[in-house]
Image (cartoon, rainbow, N blue to C red):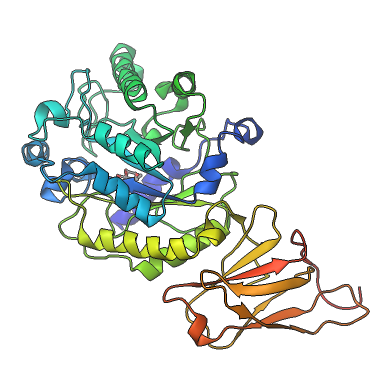
Length: 440
Ligand code: JFZ
């Protein structure tokens, strides 16, 4: 019951603000993002010391504020090796990475000049942990993303703090709210000046309106510093792409660019009591479905307070990387695939749409089938091994324009341990028949 009430209370938060940005105006700068397909999300903060829920643990009163903030003392970063992180991200096949510069708890991971918490001033790590990471990413040609929480529950001029109380109401004290605005916008400017992110990943916009955050001004400020920077969809309508969270979409999100952010277990940050790891197979099949629907996957890891990445996450990233490397041409730089109804599984298309890639779900024992394909197939190969497969056209009537069904036999010995991908080389750009059968 409590959960049901919470759901309805939070419902307005998830109703998307009206999109203010016109796709045609941003198409050029979005190109690398469309091609990238995979990003690695990193939630690193003092919550990793106790392995508690990131920021929400004190907000939801699972732990007291004094106990929460005491975790600063355990944030050592003593085995932190940013080049190793970047290399692992590279190995996973990801083209960009987004790290928490500051979560809802308000603790900055850089040396903020503002009068507020940072791991530089207030923790034994005693250094800017972002700078060497961004440098390592750039060395590996990986785009740099900055997660920034608009919400800052520990700043004395921010209204929200614990889930059942608030310090004040914005409408009662604009001066105080203005002090907060000045503070968070100054911090944004610092992150922008220090690291010049290729992408901004805002979070927490649901607590205030576009007017209250001054979302348009924030967008313009970031674009003035870097006209090509990309902004995610949590800026009350002033972002460039949609950001569904955790749940995997059945139909394509409406906006032209989108990204599913997803944890590898049930938590964003390092967690002590969470062993619900997704398997590499699950991550790979979800990833295939995302790119089939024209989106990106932003897959999260939560390093420990000493800077090491949990073994299970290293394992997932490495297995994903192995599979990505083998199937590179079917994934990176492709287009979303066929609309539903033509193939019972994910698909992608080469940029000129004359190669159709079929991602086979599970282990295939019988023949697979493609429907409504008007093109002639020149050849079919297994991606990554180049074996040729034969096919048979079934049900084609010589005098009818309706295409037959394409049956393809996929022998056991050509199948991948996770997900097999076939390449259908077509006689030109893909052409589909989407009508019904009969005498037409
Ligand atoms: C948000 C963050 O709160 C979360 O900690 C993480 O950073 C994720 C990527 O983004 O996710 C949400 C957003 C809203 C709710 C919960 C988690 N909510 O309203 O309950």
